[in-house]
Amino acid sequence: MNNTILNKIIVDISDKTVEKAFKEDSAENISGRIFPYSEDSYPFSDSLYVCDTPAGCDALIKKGYPVAALVHDGNRDADFANVKYILEQPEDISLEDYDHIYRRICGLPVDIMETERLIIRETILEDLDRFYEIYDDPEVISFMEPLFPREEEEVYQQNYIRNVYSLLGIGLWTVIRKEDDSIIGRIGIEYTTKESDVELGFVVDAQARRQGYAYEACTAIIDYARTLNGVDRVTARVRNDNKVSQNLCKKLNMVPGRELNDGLVEWTLDL
Image: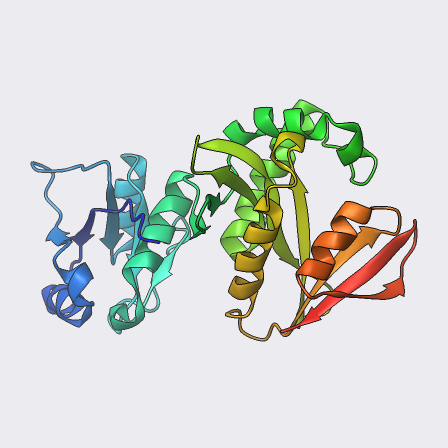
């Protein structure tokens, strides 16, 4: 999917040789988006600012701009303590990478994937109202842990965005139906204590069940898991009395294995 938000990369680089190399070494679809910083012409709301001095970065951050630092041979000892992202070797950075950095700094969700009927993206706080509706269902709360009270859930989700999405790149995501742009569930993968495993989690709104949405989303997410370095198995923890989730696991070619506590069974799929 191509839903890039980032439009321009504004550079404030003190070393003009480095600035020239930064543009020349970047991929073609990036180099055309790179412009020198000018206080008279900017800001643009859809731009990422790249600077190579701590003072310059701090000044741009103070103005409210999304900023990444560029490290090169001339500034490796510099302290970019206030910058969230440090860039090196622009030839290895894709437009998608820049777009993700821009979104992370601005607090915007990253679109993970698109299927025939669904868009799967990172969760934002505005999704919580819909989540509370989905979880207000006896079938859901009988098999899953409930959400926290609202204030606690917001804090939890903010930390999740900051510490799981930003650092690990995967997690439980929001599932949106393209037909009406409605949120119909949460599905995703998380790392487990075993480095080669990811755990699949899923919950779908009652009104959207038995229409193949969970299978469609989980199939795409399992394919995504195959692209992750070092991951060779997907697991899911399913209650032994949850026939609907067991049937979904069977359709995904997962097999039941060891019994866990609280009536849970671990289902697995080798990638």
